[in-house]
Image 1 (cartoon, rainbow, N blue to C red):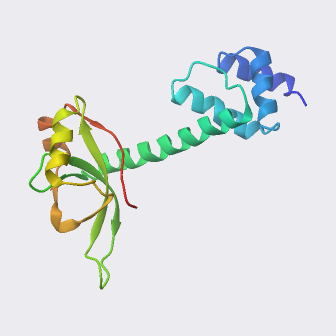
Image 2 (cartoon, helix red, strand yellow; image 1 turned 90 degrees about the vertical axis):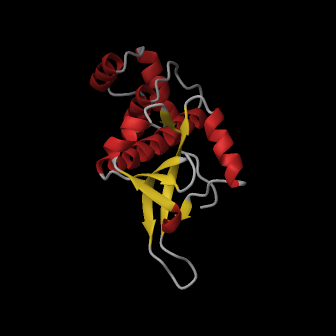
Length: 167
């Protein structure tokens, strides 16, 4: 089945894609217009400059897009809440994503998306000092909160790496 002519013209112009490529992607997604629009938005958002060649590739791009949008939403909300933090006694910084209430067995914890230095060496050295992985869930007593403006003043060279382990 082909894409409706008025939509084909609109999306071809909007996404700067040849008409035959628009129809090709539309057919790969089993003629689902909403999924097609999400795929085109994903390609723009992720700065991809190609046309996926098969259905699996389309779904891979969509999955990557959904994960990035989710992480960006957490990142933005964390900035709004001043939820930057540091692992006490180290120079390892993170952004608090979730909070977990205490139970009989476990203390109150935060889910933290860890940050890394853009050059990487200092970050790797700090991780070696703690002898292990940086787990996503961390005991609140091991974490120091840092206000957003203080974090930005001192740590402008840090970039998010968003890797967490053990959740």
